[in-house]
Length: 68
Image 1: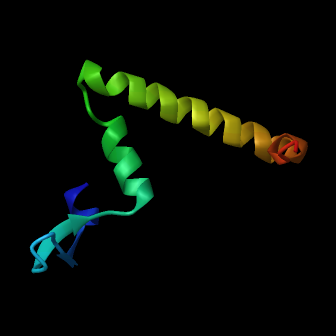
Image 2: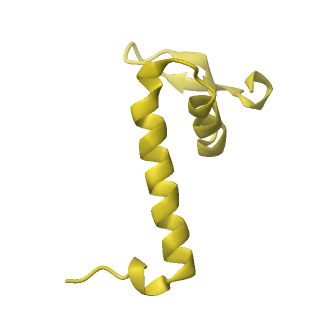
């Protein structure tokens, strides 16, 4: 996982730029899934629920339309 993180210069509150580790959303979600702690379980369940809803929307695009 660490090899998929990049070092980017970002400005901190002290206005200086520092190298920080950065990753895309896919890598971050994969990292969360690999955490063995029970404290991560609620977030893993949330990700599973959101993924399930997105799959349903792909299969049935009418679900993706918001009612006004």
